[in-house]
Image 1 (cartoon, rainbow over the protein chains, first blue to last red):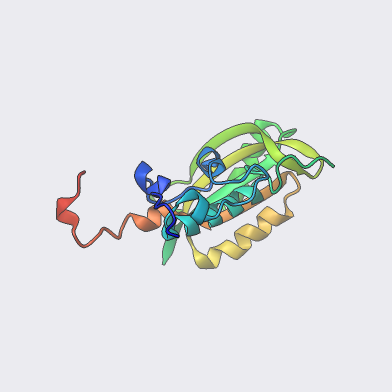
Image 2 (cartoon, rainbow over the protein chains, first blue to last red):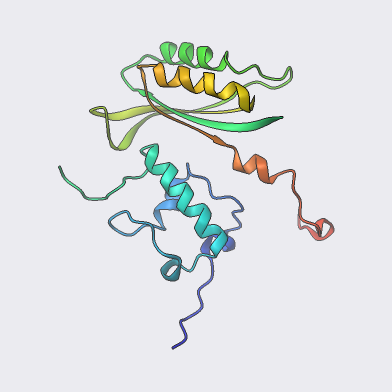
Length: 73
Length: 112
């Protein structure tokens, strides 16, 4: 069965390089637990998905994004 | 060959701003800048951390952009690691700057 074609939200917004300091943009590509959303669900193109995954990992290192959301203890 | 780097520092929010600027000056003294350029600093100020670091819930964020030779970085990062008031740091290549000098082949039909 053919999957519905989705367009890359980052390409559409005209962003060339994903910035790891832009946590509001990155937050849109996380699950509610804080995992990176796969491109098959978000529809991001391969280039931006690669940039996103690096940016999200850097943002986690710098405590801009949590490693796990909603984890108590 | 010198390249543009971007550094993000998270300082202990208990530190005073004068102490932070003094530390930043000390760090950046290890990176000789070309005559016309200076280290570009952006201060985000006190922010809540996404998770506690060293038992602290807030940190003082500063972002710096600078030109540096790759050979001068190990000494710079050693100074960052030894600093007690610095909770965490990250030094990466400035990706935006990297993209700038490589315009596409079909440059003539650009919108801007």
